[in-house]
Amino acid sequence: MEGRMQPDSPEARPPGTPQQPRLPAAMAAPRPASHAASRPAGRPKPPPAREPGRVHWMELFFDLVFVAFVGQLAHGIHGDPGWAEYATFVLLFFPAWWAWANIVSVVNLLPGLSARQLGLAMLAAMAASALMAASAPHALDERAWAFSLANAALRGVLLALWLRHHRQHPAEPRWRIWLYNGGTAAAWLVAAFLPMPGAAILWALAILVEVGMIAVSRRTGAQASMTGVNVEHAAERLGLFVIIVLGESVFSIITEASADWGPGPGLAAALGFVLVALLGWAFFQYGMGTLTAGLEHLRERGDFGGILQTTLFMPFALVVGVTSIAAAIATAIPEPFEPLPTGAAIALGGGVALFYATNAAVSLRYGQSPGTVLPWALPAVVIALGLVPAGANVPAAVVLGMAVALLVLVTAYVELKARRRRLSP
Image (tube, rainbow, N blue to C red; front, side):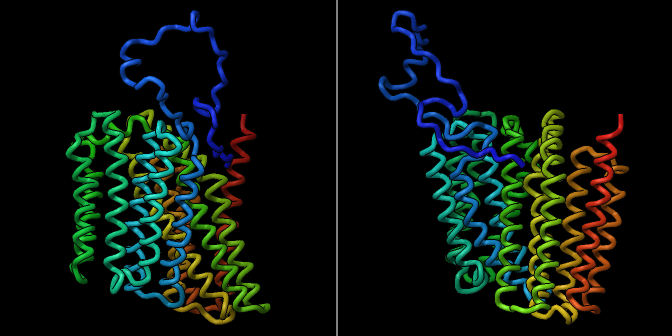
């Protein structure tokens, strides 16, 4: 994937715009009176921090905090996680993902933010996200107040950004912005003063309000704000978040291999690395192209509900799948010749199945035919689920090898299909 990031231009003009020759005052075209009255003399408007389709460095800096957040939560599903551990992982991870996706969405729709404005917004969101990450390991007990305050602060940042967007594009009802961000921020703030389980119930209600308002966005007129979505920026931001999750997976493998040095752990770590590398290959070689083309297809059709589904909801399932796979690999490395615990076997097989099922669902939503998607998706999901009983009965290194073989076969199939399309007249 080509990088689209560049530093700010020191000149008062959008990046990439050629500098125009300066005309003598007598030859310069007069400015309209309305333009002159809209801005005080001697105070030119700051240039945009980024081009609409490009990611700014401050956005990447903001993303770094989610490396820590994913790592904090992923440790909770290492070993032999049960339903309670998985439920806790999803319960705590979704608010962070949801806040990240909402911040990405509003920044996408505000390409005119100056470097100072964008930087302050990203730093404020980063500080709140860092508090959320630090409180995550004990967010359901003594640090629930901190987790609540962090989410309230994030929604405060979102409220300010969406109100700015509303001033420029007043098509969306203002009451919806105040309810979506202001009302839920108040709910998270109140939750900071409640004991468990009252706080968790209020968290769930706040999230349900936000998700529900997205689900009925067409009826409330909210989709009007999505007409200005920039496909290139949205696709690249999602790709960068997947890099974060894959990077945390690689970090986890290296950490476990360093702690359990030896031939067996080294074999399991190598197989785990190949497995994560093949996931990255599948997503960045094929998924990014599908993502960009699919979002463009939905935008041309005016299907903004599809854009919301494939940028806010479906990628969360893919990220959960990749994180589960990484947790299973980390569990396998210390004892590569013993069967995986049941929870780790479910994490491995279920994670691979979830990865391919999500990719298939997104591809179908983007308009690809079932005849193109199902031949690779159905076998991949079915065989991946077969890794669950295998993982609980054969050595961990063997089941990792089986997972690698599955990904190699799917990758080879997709590569051959792509080659045939290129060679066909």
